[in-house]
Image (cartoon, rainbow, N blue to C red):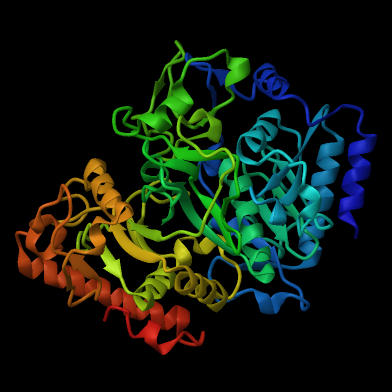
Length: 546
């Protein structure tokens, strides 16, 4: 079935289509159609149904077919297969739903600031706020898009956020819910046909992360490494990458007034250097502190005519006077805001830079046993890249209330569908070729587990990040952690020796040993389960905590 042709025909024949309408019209229609309301600052506020307050990993699926199934690691729990038949059913239903809508919208954008591999993306939806979201998050089509390797291979995405599938029709095709009913939601990708369909998920992240997953599949096959990271550039033109899962501080730490931001979440590393995928940011806003996260706060909360604003605040408490309460998490602890990069004061508009000399792996350790900053050898860097350890924080996924220790390969497992050796080997090759130094930064807890001490102050973390980026940590002495094998600096700006070595910061040393060994055991068990049969370099495997 040629769905791309059918989608084009449907768009041509629909009596009321807004194709690439001006941004102000997107905003106006979002308000007039009751999809959003205008806040006191001019930013837009919207809410989703409870099941759409975060991603739905169990409803996010990939078409599995013989021609390409060998590319994908089906042992990864996030790579959930569906048949081509199931995908076709969802696409057929989506087109039928769109044909019945009184108005539909289309945007043509690209993903990728480097025109040599920018992916053209056409989004078709019945929701004005969705096309505004794509205007915030995806990039305008560049004049030189013709030189893209994907010029003749565009991606088409259908998004119907507030309709549901018929569970009876999909019985035996989609997952069973705990109550025995079949799911009525789908976030599906067909990598071979370059198609995506979202029905029933109103979470903005479903659109954003679907396209990120697509890039993570396509780019390595073209010799380009996609990375779940933020990136910025120093005044001397040096670039840095910050890798980490949602909630580890990528957005906050990369918004550094002394460094120009390329982007806060998704980048590609090619022979040309580093390039942002996106046009904007999708930042967590729960408990945001205007004094500590001034750049991000002002990007959303600056006052402007609502028709010129267009930042979208998702699932945050708002009062009748139009004022937000970002500390109220009764609906969800995952309130977010999407906004264009240009709303930040210090960005690099081209969103491209040179090969990175410094790479930071961010982890929010809820066990409190990892040092706030440590240096990794190349083999250790590969190990921690494969493991992607952090503590999953409340609200990043439906049902997560308290932090849970988790391993997410490449700090983005749900979005990394290919076999792991491909991503790992590409990073190792680039690190060696360009002399990149990797540091592990714990943005979580230190001195005791989550719930017993406060999270490491973000200003202290910023000071240690700055020490790594400025080269201050290059010449200090280090000692090796006997359990986790990472190298701990003996000194670092703004940090005491007690804080730098987590064992020294624990009052109960026996409790520290037990907690650290338990986490090390978790590392070893997970590594064997996830990579025991994946032909990982023995030198890398040897660096796993035991």
